[in-house]
Image (cartoon, rainbow, N blue to C red):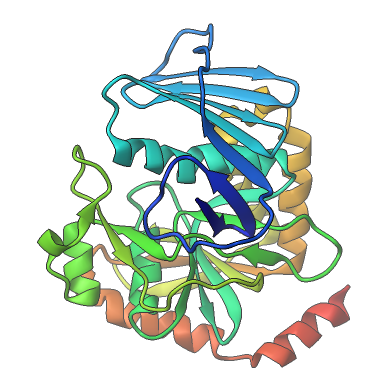
Length: 308
């Protein structure tokens, strides 16, 4: 099958549910194959190996993935590996490694489109990125991507974001609070977790969109946003780069740093402090809407152009 994700047409022997199918020439090939495990010792259920143009990674109970030259992923599943896990690691970390090979900046963030401009939420696992994006999606704002924010190489213009799969990964209580769903009617990510896959209300976006603002999620006793200085924003971007823990081994520290510096010059950042309370999601989403709605899209893009 051929599907599209993050602007790439992918010809895959692994079926991934919920991804839009497309009949274009493939840019990425995904195949089942014999792939040797990395020679390094596994840490936390993962073993990795780096060579020029190649990245080999083994996940315990899932399989070994060889990502090569930004255009090929070879997969050797573990015997008895759950199909949902193989799919999850393909469309998540394996594809993130491939996009890094293609020169794209990949951040740990969830993003939506508000008035045609991309607004996102940076954070680690469990910080509420998906829940925030879902709360805005439920209010009519299109999902751009959940968990992976993929930014095209800098060309000196407005940063452009490539849309990802049109679904969320949500804990059952978040799906109830945001969409009023019955969690039992939603598919689990895999059998070992309670998280559910939930289709976005907006469907799939098929064109890159301009990035306007990123929020760094934080806890607070009251709801507020605090503007970030460029130096703070840079630290946040480096920390929340999707591959930050292995960027040195990938040989990408300098390139990643330059990409993050350029991004701090092109968009605005702030810290979003909010209480850990699902009942407050409406107020939080309303605050974001009010802040982003202060500028019309064309006026904002004009302001960006004038600062360069």
